[in-house]
Length: 170
Image (cartoon, rainbow, N blue to C red; front, top):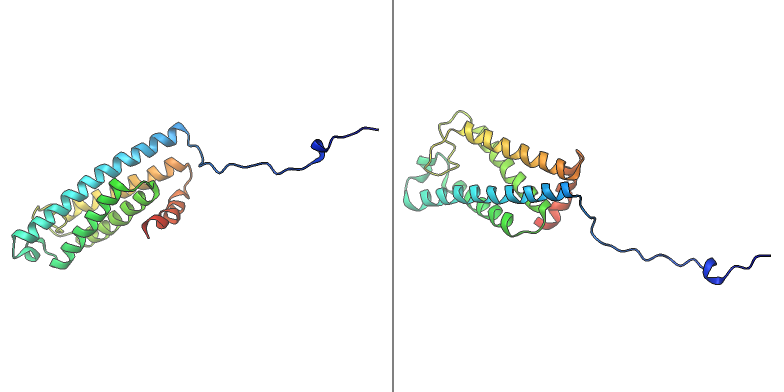
C-alpha cells in the first residue's frame, strides 16, 4: 500500500500572470518602422494643413483658388492636425494605424473623385495634379496595410487592428 502525501493530491490552481505577449525582434522592428512612418506622415499632414490654413487666412478667394468650399478646407485642416497630433502623442500603435488609414482613405476617395482636375486643393495654393495625390494616398494605404500584416503575421490583422484601435479613438 502506497501512501500519498496531502501535498501531492491537492489541486491548487496555478497562478497565471497576465503579462502582455512578448513580441519577436522582427515584430519589434516592424513596430519601430510603423512609428517612424507615422512620424513622417504626421509631418506631411502638418505641412498640408498649414498650407491650407495659410491660403484660408491670406486669400479672400481661397475657395476659388483651391476649387473647394471654405468649410471643407477648414474641416480637412482640422482632421490633418488631429491625426498628426495623435500620431505623435498616442501610445497605441493600432490607434495610430487606424487614424492614418482612415484619413488617407478619405483623402484617396476625395482625390480620386477629383482625378482629372489640375489640383484638388489638398495642399492649399500649391497646385499638384489630383492624380499625383491620389497615387500618394494609395501608396500610403498600401504601406500601412502591408506593415500591419507584416507585424502580426496574418492577413486578418488589419481587421483585428480596426477592432482594437477603435477603443482608443472613441
